[in-house]
Length: 42
Image (cartoon, rainbow, N blue to C red):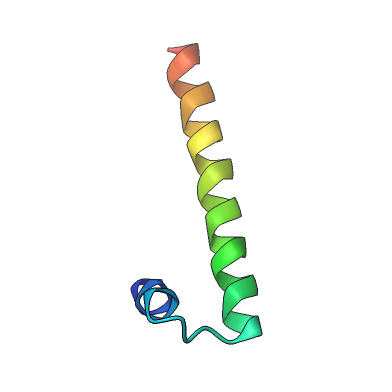
């Protein structure tokens, strides 16, 4: 992921890498939401 972010900063991402980075971002949002739900239950 760090390599993807470095390539994004340098504006060198391929279209496949853009899709991969967006998917990783979506997973991050999902897990953040799940963690927030778990904390709220405690």
